[in-house]
Image 1 (spheres, helix red, strand yellow):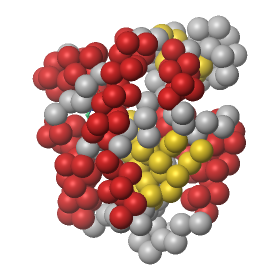
Image 2 (spheres, rainbow, N blue to C red):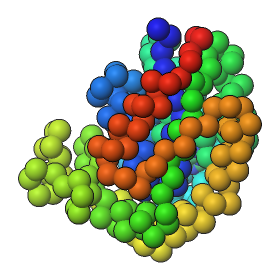
Image 3 (cartoon, helix red, strand yellow):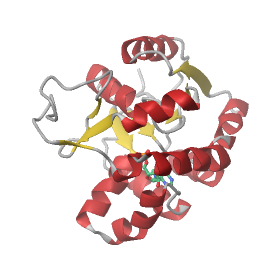
Length: 222
Ligand code: AMP
């Protein structure tokens, strides 16, 4: 079977990162989260990190050229036969066009775009309870996906922290950014026949089952 190449689309807080991690564990796909890549750059205070910092902290989007370069470089670090999930990228139509061109140049194509759908009222509650491992970036939720030991990562024992952009005012800005700049990708990928809706309001296990059900229906030609 050729490697699976997926995009996870959907507003923040709909569980894309959690499900990408589960696919990484169950199918060996690389989970490439644009947010994690940017947060690493910011932590290291690289040139990219410095350029991205203000946009990330305010809930806006970093410039298309910056994120496209970073994400295609991440794809290039994988073995050519590796499958991957792009989590949080693309987020604008120009990014989607750049991704299509970049993948075509590498003789790669997307198998599907999973569109995580969830009511906004549910999203805000979820994000406010979100905690992330400061070491390996695994995501938890204080109410419905707690770690086994309080404030410690189950995987690596790292300290769990709240992201600075998970404050409610920034979350609202991120949701506005999504509606204005990212929601048009739903039509973009629907027209290409790649879009698969996912009911992301369900619990993580049910969403995982739905994701696997959708993946089992894909007809893949390489
Ligand atoms: P996330 O972890 O996916 O919620 O991303 C956190 C923040 O990183 C976003 O609010 C944006 O500021 C930035 N970001 C992540 N992915 C992208 C992207 N594809 N394009 C532009 N900015 C992005």
